Image (cartoon, rainbow, N blue to C red; front, side, top):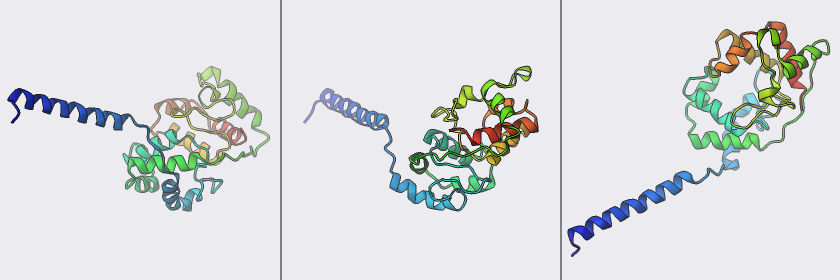
Length: 208
């Protein structure tokens, strides 16, 4: 029979070993299951198409989008931090693993270039995207979203090739306060006119 001291030592050792195992599990990077992500994406296909390609301009193109950004948006839809009746309901049953898997699936798809449609506003759109609007302290979009619109993983989304109509709608809802999950974008859009929003939205559609 173990002495009280030996027994206590055994408990401490066991606790330390268990803690090490849990720490190792917590530190292990998540390995996305693309097959599982594709299965989840079937439900998303009605709006985003099965692989997130160029569906209706009402909905964002998801192919090639940064997985971290997609997970952030899904998390905020689930928490009602970003309000959209359709997406709030779609995100509600998703687990964190589900979100990471479906985000990884869409991110694995190669982005398809789009094109600007209005040649009369390309110059204004480019000026705003690359140089901002100095007199109203609107920063250059390229500073966060990159010269080619590729964005910065985990921070800023890919804009290059995105539907102009969708980008315009998001900037407008940021400006109105209908979308509140990015104070930075609410502030920036709040200093832009309808014409400026429309011009830069069309311009980013052609970035690649």
